[in-house]
Amino acid sequence: MLTTHGNIYAWGAGDSAQLGRRVIERRKIHGTVPEKVVLGTRARKAVAIAAGSYHSFAVDTEGDVWGWGANHLGQTGTGRQGAGDDEVRLPIKVKGLNAEELGDGERVVEIAGGEHHSLFLTSSGRVFACGRAYNGQLGLEENDPAMVNQLDKESLAEPAVVRFPGDGDDPIVHVAAGSHNSMAVSEGGALFAWGQGMSGELGAKDDDEVRTPREIVRRSGGSWKALEVACGGQHTLGLFLRKS
Image 1 (cartoon, rainbow, N blue to C red):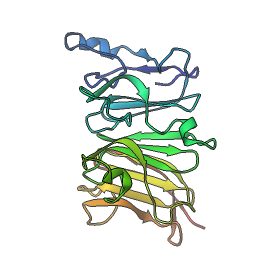
Image 2 (cartoon, helix red, strand yellow):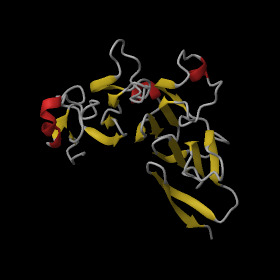
Image 3 (tube, rainbow, N blue to C red):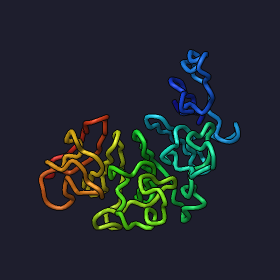
Image 4 (cartoon, rainbow, N blue to C red):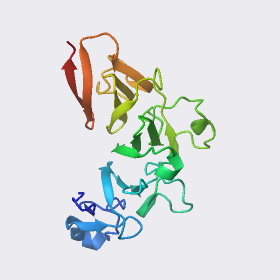
């Protein structure tokens, strides 16, 4: 929960550190009480929050991006911290996505968490992804430099840029993540999908897996314009506007 004063509160299951605090086994009931999440110092205020299945995120007023929770597949985007880095117990900064690192006034404006992967959308319409990679949910080519330089080809611990067809002329304005799939909507009304689609959640007909973003609703031509998309565990909802 994000308050009007920029404070974050979390509650629920905390066994993967997704609450930003430790909840010990014999006192799980303590996880049901909302408690404040601190982003480094209590003076920092948040402007956006997001949660995956076992991990959490926040963006503060300075444009710094924070992640915490399960990190065994790099889904918090905070990099490898060394031995015992399967969990990020307290919020730490996500690699490469803070306002100062992005430059030119660019900031992360939306985050979507899946089961083991995460998507980050910036104010300039760029999308970054990290976490589990072996079902295509990151949308990265096999020869993408971010993957080529990885010893572990099944996960990515630091966010990398996702490339879209016609990249650059139609910025992305919205992202969503399901358990093992990802979706994005462009400014021009295109809908893109990638990842695992065993239950048809990609909208890609009979394809069970799409490795890189595929245009499901076309920007040019067609009768519909995509406005928004939401992903569940194995299903997807889309909001569309009929073109005049």
